[in-house]
Length: 304
Image (cartoon, rainbow, N blue to C red; front, side, top):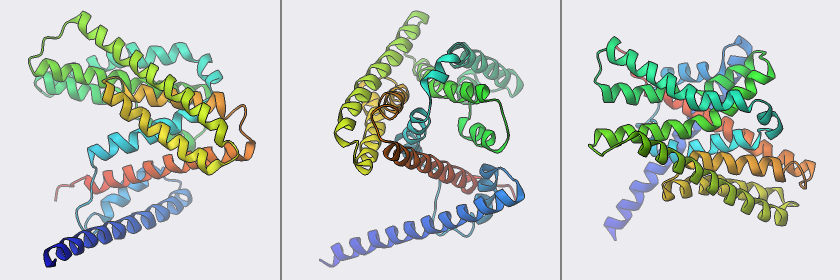
């Protein structure tokens, strides 16, 4: 009994410490939001600087967790972007989006990898892996900057649309490089086939869950709180189901978000319910971005 009480006390202490850190980060984010607007400094830049400043004062070890980012933060950011994307605007810029998300990513990845190989004298595998990571658009920071300055709406649509699809292609390339590094036979035809399966599979999962969500949405359209819970379940389950089936969870989340945002929210849902759901996802995306950039600042170890 004493041992169980000690374990319970330890867990309670860890939870209390986590809540304390969360409160500190929320207060810091609020202060940064106020100061960045007054000083006309980009919000994300202020968050990173604030994270650097408070790193020594935050109790306990707090940092970026890859599992948390991939399984929770990434689906939220993708779904938030997709549900707010107008398919009619996306259709008008489809050609440049596909060019940037497909050949654009491959060319950028190849050029970056070659530069890292011969410029920094890295081995091929690390150079290729880093090249893939750097090749995709950092949409979070780009869109955050777009909100601060005036840019053409077409450019913003292209960047947002390209970011919806380039992650899936980059993740597949990343996986193929790892397979090659692990001495698994990789051929050009096999790579193209796997890429097609992953993307088409993700597309199918997204369509199925998107239409399932629309069907359930009809039953809860007069209850915006239930609609919010439904969209959260669709966003997270689309990603996890895609991962489970070995297809692109990124594409699945994007397609599901596009379907729900354009086929359901724009038609049968009342204006008040639509505003409630979209406001929730705007807040969710803002909150995730805030914590990501604060944690990046906390993770940076400046040389002394």
